[in-house]
Image 1 (cartoon, rainbow, N blue to C red):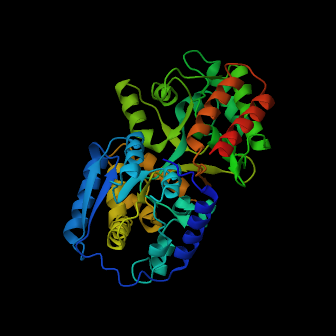
Image 2: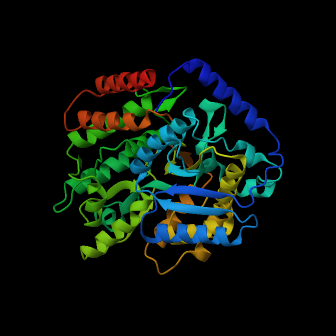
Image 3: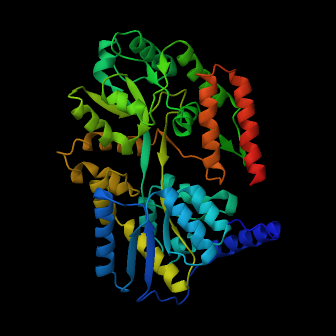
Length: 438
């Protein structure tokens, strides 16, 4: 529940407090010994739940402060968000909760997210210079909010990337020797596939994340300087590109939410854009269909030096409690970031490590017999390539609603045949109206 009473005064106090806390050099004499903390997470089954439970058990049995973490699976992110909304009202809050960046921002404005900067920087409880150098700051900084005086409102825990799956055998049969590196080649591949019997062109998923990956690969962003920007050259060019593909009958709109990658697994299309978390589903789809073809994952095509990979970073948010529980929560997060924990998590779940040393060593601990491993290693190399930029979506509270607006706009310029510039201008107006109302 948003607190609107004396909102300007409250915002001022929150920002001032965040600035003070971020400068504190020590947590004083806080002793976390014997603390018990509750962690609401989204790991409900399979390897993710098993591995998180094992990590919690390891921490509980080995940490020197005898801290106890009670991990509770609470459904998906929407379920957890609803539980938090109720808990903020009732006061029956967990100490740690899973969420995205917009969740962290929302909770922070309700005094339900802790700035982790004092813990990260503390000479006793924080990270050494060597450890800091080993952390992938491109990932860590996703949870640092410029809008709130640089407050670190969460800690990354589940890193995946938006990658382009490419059927190399199909490309070869169509006369192409590898994945497209520019948009003209991308279109040529899509059109060649669309004109070939038994295959279709590029599957346009009406999804903001896929749209933003294309925008970022043209050097743009949909949000900057505190405003949504849907009339920039990069955005308009992306809308125009989609429209041209569709109008040229070189692209189609899949019928289901994951129809783009489902069709890819069936050998129906040459390329599909989606999260690395979906790679196991592509593999199983290929196997279930009795197909066999050589494929890889890579970035979207790009302009100039704008080769980019978009990452998704669901995180863990610390909910303010007693000083002892706050520190205990931080120590558990720090444990999850240790190299051994990162290696165990990556090996079991195929999510990417936030430690550079672990990422560089992936070939030595990933299961070579696991069919997902080659694709994990390819995507992991993209994330750690200094010549490839990292993009992440806006942290703003309105982002969830704006995603829906982008999906509608994508449909408008393709299936609904509307003018790109008019759609872009209306989208920008509607998106920034949400900012104003928020």
